[in-house]
Image 1: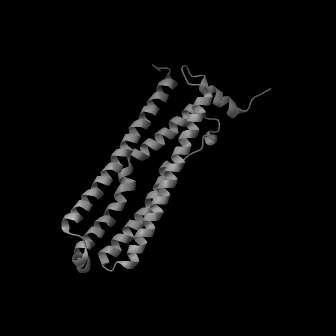
Image 2: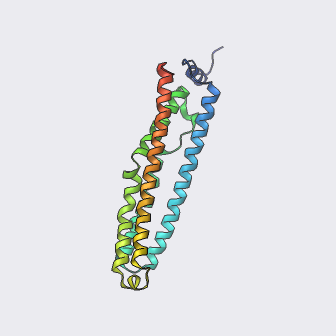
Image 3: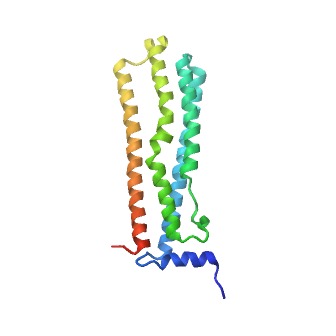
Length: 195
C-alpha cells in the first residue's frame, strides 16, 4: 500500500535530527499563516480608511497643494496594500504540496523577513510626498494660516509624524530580526547543527 506523496513529504520533514514533532511544526505554520493573514487584513482596512479620509480632504480642501497631496496619499494607499499583497501575502501551509514542512516554513519566514526589511521603500516612502505637500499646503493656504493652530502645535504634529514613521520602520526591523532567528533555527535543524 503506497502512501500519498504529500503525506510522505510531510513525514520526511520530521526525519531531520532534532526536529520538533510534525504536529508542532504544523501548528506553528498554521499560527504564522493566521497572524500574517490578520496583519494584512488590518493593513488593508487602514489603507481604506486613509483613502476615505484623504478623499474627503480632496473634495473639501481648496488649496492646490492640499488637493495634490491628497491625491498622492490616496495613490500611496492603493500602492502600499498592493505591494503588501505581492510581497507578504499569507500562504496557507496546505499549499506546500509535497514540500517538507520545515522547508515551506523557512520559505515563508524568508519572504516575510524580506518584506519587513524593505518596508521603507515600498510602504513608508510612497506616503511621504503626499504628506509633505499637505504640510506645505497648510503654510500656503491663507485661511488655514489664519484659522489653524499655532506654529508650535504644527511643529509638534510634524515631530509626531516623524516619530510615528520612525517607529513603524523600527518595529518592522525588529520583526525582521525575529524572523531571522526562526530562519537560523530551521537552518540549524536542516543541516543537523542544532544546539
